[in-house]
Image (spheres, rainbow, N blue to C red):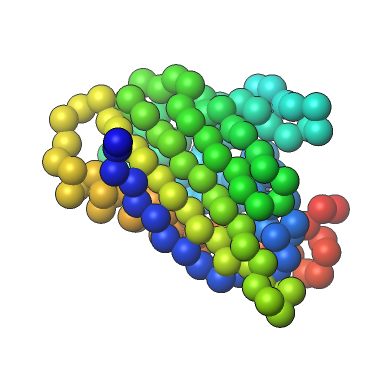
Length: 153
């Protein structure tokens, strides 16, 4: 089984508000540093993205890849790699757990990356940690910057 990296953050919003930002792929370039372009290629019967093409520019790493998404209500979204030039695997998930106060959500991001070029496992885990931390920080700032229930507007 492949090793993965995991981290969590608490966001001052409901799971529905957090998931609305996660599901809004068209706005990823506004709050993620690495995603320069996102295009939904297909949706499920509920209108949620099933496949998304992402154009990434993370300095030394520039790649275009397609991910397949699976949604479990407002609790979890997971994805896996369909195709990429630089990656062999990119599997991840966001898991959302509401806090007892009803005003906060614990978001756990899990990620497994396998690149086509040889890389030491410790370096790969460190890169995953940086990706996760940046994503969680960006998600928190984005969600908490939207007043009230404005996420779904």
